[in-house]
Length: 96
Image 1: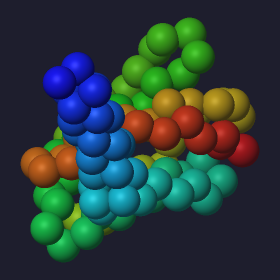
Image 2: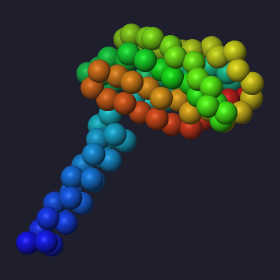
Image 3: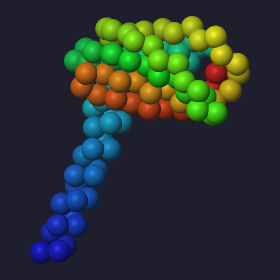
């Protein structure tokens, strides 16, 4: 019985990870100091949060399936958190 429970937990964990990476339907791209966020047609984007390594962040309220943000930031590594109505995604990116 313990083995069945452990296998069940593993399956649940795998499903969540798969859902966030492939079924989430949110892609994040960079172009210079611009961040482009694109969502599949069934996901409505709601918010994009840009955080730097010191913990400062900027919050952008957005809508639709596509947004391009021209960020007034220095070159460096940032964490982009995207919140949608049916999916979320967090990714570290380098801006030039």
